[in-house]
Length: 490
Image (cartoon, rainbow, N blue to C red):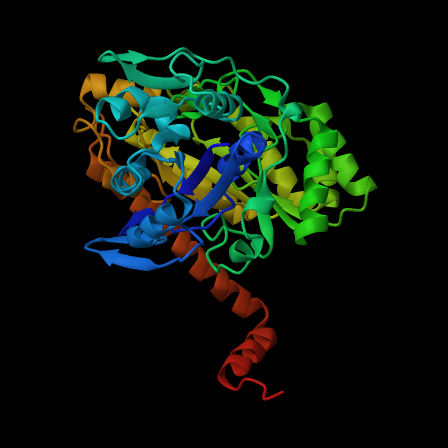
């Protein structure tokens, strides 16, 4: 029985990039569950095991130092090392782990998986960073991969496995998994859950309540065609989902075995199937699960209405993130290809306010084909939603992620300065990020100015709102000031 070591590498954050956050490595947990009967599998998560923070120039590296990873490799002496690469911006850490593996256990097979290798597998293999890449969903592919190696067979030719043979790329696409319920639940028992719960970084970059919380992904694939999104590149366009019974089973596992009461639904299309979504909500309510949950990755606004929002609140929804993207219908239609109605999204935002679900709204500016006036139209809407409905705006800068239509357009038209570095991707992929795209309609500095003006407008509104509150409730404000100045000794 082969020994498999799955590694979640450290992460690098550059000055000004989004905050670091620890998360349960769902992808590795699913893959581990799929091969545990075929192999002796272990998970080493650098984000919780022997955790350290190292400052390197203008960057911070979060996670176990490489020497500690080397010690773990020497102890485990694996036959197969699987390395997770969730983001292109974090690839260098995975490459360092792969290089370390070749030094420490040279006979081990190195395989990379995750969203980034699913898109850039040819480049990764040509550069010699890995022996194999698992492309797309990993559960079935990695299971066949481990089985082949255990039997002494060449994994080349297994659908979903990419490798170099005879100097050429060998890869056959694997169909996406349609019956998700046949997959085993994540192998939470292969990690120490308390290490995650005790980390003050747990989901720190997701906002909202984080204590004893986990992320869930209950569906895969996206049938929409947004120009900036890379989801369909590794999860496909066909929408597939777990049944309500399986989702509720997963929730109960986390509640009963790990004391979890807060869940982050990371689905790209949690509510796309209304009947399924309502069945999940009905199960949560009917079974008295008494949880709270949010949607930090966003939810499709045009799938919601007042009845559904009321049921969501009753089931424990404590925070929603709405994917507006733009405040201009033309940009939504012709530039982003969002295929949704801005008017309807504003109506739903008002419903969220009436139902009293705390809500964030994602906006993105800086797309090729967008004008500065349209960007300001977006920031104006974001400010109005905050002022009128208390919808918290999150303004992002358009990021040309490798493999997306946005990236291809920017590269073809010269809107970006060639291949993007990890630092550039990190600095751009965040709220109020550093723009990478410049067109004949706007410069990078123009986009930064729009974002800066938006932030200043939000800060002015907040200051004025506080002043109005003090004037309206002078006694309550005076009491709060006094409490801060002379805190109670009790």
